[in-house]
Length: 424
Length: 166
Ligand code: SF4
Image 1 (cartoon, helix red, strand yellow):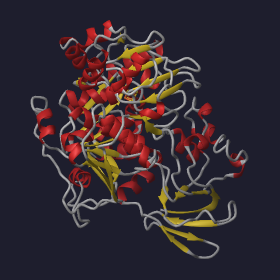
Image 2 (spheres, chains in turn cyan, brown; image 1 turned 30 degrees about the vertical axis):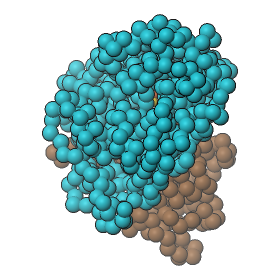
Image 3 (tube, chains in turn blue, cyan; image 1 turned 45 degrees about the vertical axis):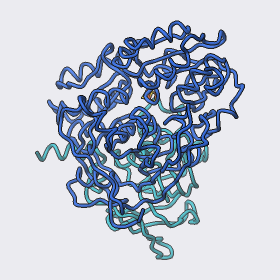
Image 4 (cartoon, protein in one colour; image 1 turned 90 degrees about the horizontal axis):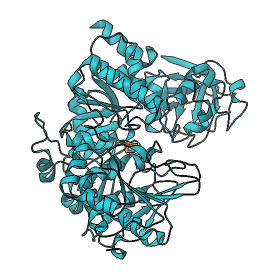
């Protein structure tokens, strides 16, 4: 790969969104957004700001997405009031992409699934994990509530064009090693600010074979390395996923062969073990063997990182015919209603229930210590989520370890953190 | 836009908790927040800082949470501009969006005398001049639309002006 005059995928998408020929890192550009997203925590603040404009319309009711997913089904009166702000706003301004409980899902699993994410588009969300959609070749990033308010009014957002780091994964993925392990290993290598301001391009033979669910997991956690966005360039796996979901036209965008990267970081994955992020930081990453024997009180399989169908399939494969360890509470939370229904049809939910797991309707719930599985002081949890900061899942003296769904399911059976091979 | 003021120096990795501690987040009033600005790392700072002063810091200023309260507290204290070697991404956005000018300058200015040295900042040219010595430092200049956001007092004012024009 040469470093020349070419552009990366992100530079091209931002240039076209801003209506300029070329955008280079450091440029500040004002771009048209194709989608603007808010949830039950951030949208009420944005809606309050939006009301200051005194508008009787939004810039485009088809391009705004509102998802009450964090504290829903409403956990208390305050949550109910917040969710009501979204619902009323959606009704008043004719927002079609408002997803009510029973039809909704965690935003970052829901938008790709519903065909709202298209390659080559610009997506902003008042939620830091908006970077997930880069898995489909979009430029997607988290912003503040004021940004969302402005985008709802005029359909634009400003950006500083980021430099790009290319991450290349070579070798063969060992059994039980997944996209989650790749991204944890990556964050462990570069640190929580290793990609600050930067775009993260995931590439190489391993990524070319990685499933869409695995790619979504990787891009989801770009923010845990401080990244502005993460992405995989569109390919056959992308187009197969989009088939039947996306109805609107799109143009896939690719990095040039002579694109300029700040750095290329390579991994050989052939000897990689499943990875665990120890508390209290997602870059505190070690191999599963170094976590052996850590006793667990709770295991959570779900979230925008790992609550997709492939994640549930892997968990069910391990849990089939097994029982959750008597000391452990296992929570399984399909990320969207569609995934829930698919898991039901495939018999996965009965595997979970028979293993004595609690299966929940889609919600962020315990991921941010909201509800549905809060930890007590001194408790330890293993979760397939993305953050393990102090107090993230409850009491400030509780601890959260992060892993793949395979390790989480196996550890729920063992009662301690184990490699899936030890249980199957 | 030209700004001129006395500098206050801070180091690397000043996080949003240091800028404004979580216990004060129950208000969004800039002046109430300003009364606790940098309180945990420099308790006398709210009393020392004055209108038009310039905050100078090292790298990764504003890392941590995405709270908009952090730039609000700085703005509420009357600080005219923040100059740092680098900013955490969401802090950078939030600062611009609430109308707080911030500049990235690769050169290290943290050796200046806190509370004594004065800088003149030209946002359009991205030029920073040390008034006592006349020495000039280069920063990335603001493009026109960002200057407009700042001059409108933030993104809401900017959008309002755009809407009025239509
Ligand atoms: S699942 Fe967790 S990380 Fe994802 S959007 Fe919800 S709270 Fe945020």
